[in-house]
Length: 353
Image 1: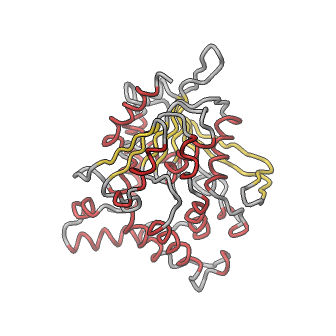
Image 2: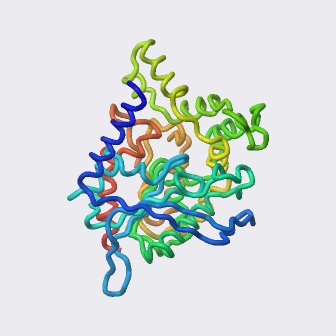
């Protein structure tokens, strides 16, 4: 199938997902003189966002229906408008029915249509961290969108890690938290090594030139490493059970797809270097449901991190989804058809807050 045909199918899928909820609205929030945790400043930091629905306030002036959903590394807020995510959650009568909820989908720093190295600064762009990203998300929510309380904070992968940080940075600001595919601990072991593989393979390319490269870099080694960690062996075998099919899928995945800018990719995998919510888990007040899947190689359950650390979260619950014919490894985080019942339970538990 041609890339044009694939793009048409993708857009058709988006339209199906969006058909049953209010039209998404996109905007930009520009922060002047934004100071990063490294001490660097950017004269103008642009944060792009998408919203679905309308905020509602109670008699005291508090917003009661706002939900922020944060994307993973290399993603964007609009990814949540897909048929398999927004189409399962935002429609009439669904768990996050956008006629009742105000859904906020930011493009994080360095991602989507927000400010990023490839805009021109390349390696002179401030070396942002997760802390900077969460602070920018908070400013978007409060300063631009006028939201003074969140009904739910939720995120996938990187966004899940941001969810833990929201619970610690702003413990009275939300009713509930749901990190999907994460661990509340410093990134170490194979997870950090994966990021180093990506970062070092970019920096050691002979054509790198400190980010001022001309022509294409060899991004294949970085993409190989990422693919092996985030893919699902079962689903890949179902998609391509023969040698010929596997080779064809491999070619499409690695040699036909549009390459990501190397500066952007390096920054997105380096910005997690300050992540470590473990010391402050007791600060989280709202109910928190941490959902991981057993076939996730990025957050393998055998590490035992969540079993240990969730005990320190006052109203925390750890849910490990078993490997099934429907799970997608790390990508299970974007399939509410699998974990939606736990979101329903979390919303019910936190409604009394």
